Image (tube, rainbow, N blue to C red; front, side, top):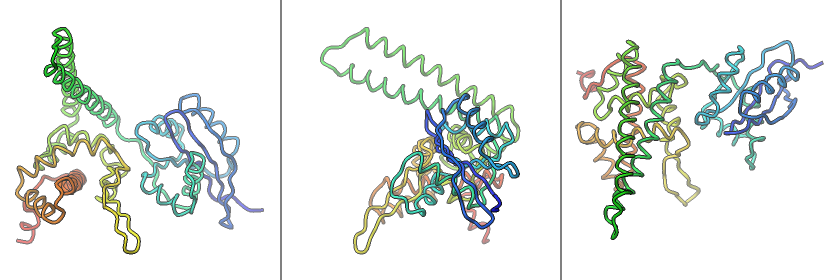
Length: 339
């Protein structure tokens, strides 16, 4: 009789559904899929999933659950499983994608993705996910709410601008839009005040954020957004990893003599990318090092956006480093260290 040495549930998470695959790894290193199912991405679906796994699993060893971070849609499931003392692995999207590609599967469906995650969980030693601090969860909700309101405000301002320059002005429409902008400004200010209050009430967080904001161009809300989106860099182990998590890693396609354009993957956290856009240009204006770095790349690539994205990557890596080392920014650190 073959003995089960590991069992894993791969879960592909979407907004409404969970595509699930349970797989066994035996002592002769063979693998067998024990079942696939779909459940709703809600409390009822989570309970049904848990009951299904309890019936299907091998009773002698713990079950592992492997899933990818998908915006916010995976979070409720991850906390549900963690509350029930289950072993949860949240694999960065880039890592999961590369593993799936190594299996040689040409098609992509939710079911196939869940099978790939299930296999990955039994073949690899993955880090067990630990839920982030409730503080980071609150901050993430607030920074995303603020970002949404700013997006709406920009849209309404553009609409107001268009009406102001039209041949036939409508005073009532203009007044309504102005009132909307005023209300949005008030709400954005309230959200920012809530964020400041949370940080002020946490001495360790406040101290580390102040150190991160010593970086030229990185203001309080930029730092908070990036820290909240990464749960205080809980799953991140290197600069390369955080760059990939943000989708700022370079994607190159070439074959033989054909050379495609290099571009960022964008297969990552859009909130981090948005948060770094303006700080990159601010750091270029206020830091000699970043200005020289930007100009050197601009001379080489002759495209300002490519050079600016490189500055974003550099800023993100520095934010991660200062947070992990609990230290402040030093403009010419390497020169001072050498001296």
